[in-house]
Image (spheres, rainbow, N blue to C red):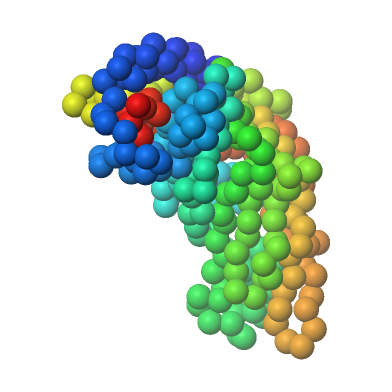
Amino acid sequence: MSSFHAGRRLLVIAAGALTALAMLAPVAHGATPLPGYTQFAGCPTQAENPAVESCIRSTITGGHFKMGSKNVPIKNPIALTGGRLFNGDIIWNSEGGLSPSKQEVPGGLVGLTGLDWLINVLNAEQLKVYAVTETVGTPNLDTELRLPIRVHLINPVLGNNCYVGSAANPISLNMITGTTSPPPPNAPITGKEAEFSFDEATSIIHLDNGVFVDNSFAAPAAKGCVLNVGPIPLNVDALVNIQSGLPSPAGTNETVQNWEAEITAPETVYGP
């Protein structure tokens, strides 16, 4: 999941502390994280990529994601695990990346398509729609958290390829903990800098109770939405876009995300 005086300043502090952490690292145990550091398993070792300066696990613990006319509450934590490079890029191995956490979309399939008759032919679970955020590019954490994503709309009868955004046309989030400057009609909103602490026993830096905000991004139209009810699949892209207010230009969307993070040196996770 600050004009990043938050992230930027705290990451500078963290980077300085990580030099000392490397000197305190435990004995090597290969490419498996040492006991107590398994939450960083998605971070590449320095043997895999010597440019990894720190291991990070950041978790979105709550908030909301408004895109067009749909406002989805974030009720299930979303974790981003990987290694931060010197240029701010976040990369990961097969254990890392963005967790595929499902968030229920209010209104379900009827609200998404406007087809009231679906209530008569589908059960309660088949009427639910879930949104899963997926990365389609390399996140970067420097003066802001830049996160290129797509949103996968998941439903048993909606097909497997119903997405808002793509690698070619992503939803480009630029999340800060400061105050936004969105185009109208959105008004500025303000996030919150995380609280910094350091656990000497584990050599882990903790950032807690932060709030990321962004209300300047655009959202493209949904594509690949196919309703599989009856003998003939029905493309419902147009219905989904009408009901969801998509595509929606910059200045009409918003995300507020409560977050926390753990950061440490690769040598601490894997040994020197």
